[in-house]
Length: 490
Ligand SMILES: [Fe+2]
Image 1: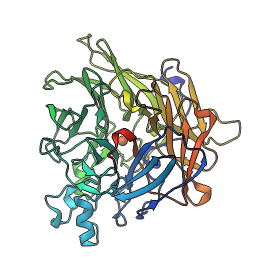
Image 2: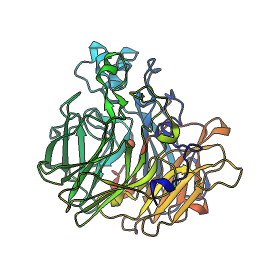
Image 3: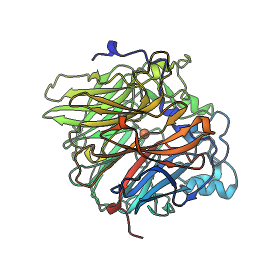
Image 4: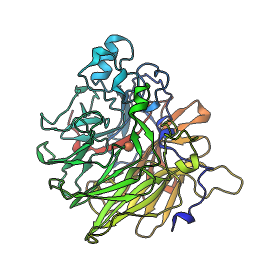
């Protein structure tokens, strides 16, 4: 498949920002629901917790601010003994607590410290609203401009508003997309603007499952652009720098951290895992956006990273530097394979191959395969082949990268879907054998939400169970499944 073979995307754009905004911008309602109502039958082997986090502004956003700056609201579907309960709590980070005490916004603009209230000097600005995982017995919530926040995985109580791995964390920032090594359970992560605001330093590091740092390396980036996600293989770490670049003039005018600068190339950086970073090679590409990794692998000296990729800025609320009107066709993403061959010492650019015609964002994989070759991927997206004359309903696609076979679950009319998350049937179940779950927002029912649970091998068979919520619940950017044996007892 080539870029020219892709169908026009404009009729059915699927925007990460739109997904993040499925919940009302000001939900502000922490919940506890015991014994949720279930249509169908909860699988007997589904035991653990499905965590989600998303922005939920603590106070109405200041004029000109963007939805990504809402405070992190974490939630948990807890599956145990054939029952499911729902709980949600704000992440009580330093920013949240300071604002609660002041009864007002103290951090009025997305990643712009110039406008902060003087009283918050020295506090972390992080909203903790982007991603959430369990690690070393803790629930960690992330925003990529600040250190993680640690929470209790069972109660969602915040226990450490600035989690630094017992002081080992060198970077001032921490990605929202750490990777878990598929073979030894290590955590690999990085921070950009790692020495503070407007620094071109990236710190990349690896910790054991017990929280002991193994290595840390510092590199410089070609320019300060968003590095939202990254990829890790057995031997390499891979970054993609995109032209959503720091805009100091815009910030001086009171605007947000980023604007899209289409004059800048993209850079695909590859360095040896566990090294000092001095071997990093930057491969150039044209103006593109690529935010999330579906999976990555290496084959000898060849590196492959599968990402959602769009022609440019995928976020309608991120300003365009040249002032052009945002175009949803150019902002729509396809799963694209980026690759380089490290054995070619003269290679200066990376290759791109679109894999599927589906138009969507927020791809996921079986999270046990972060650092090894993978086969199965999932994507929330509109129906790629709707019936003639019918609108394309939202759904979840399943990709088999070996056969390129696809499946599609159609969520029905008037439904918006959040990112899906995969739960393996058991610890040692084969790749992709288990359940795919995600929250559906029913637009015709005043935004009432369901948690849809599908057999991940048979998405097109429809839900095996649907957890019916009585109304809306807090929104989500990303989510995480933690199996029962990895949760604390109690
Ligand atoms: Fe993300």
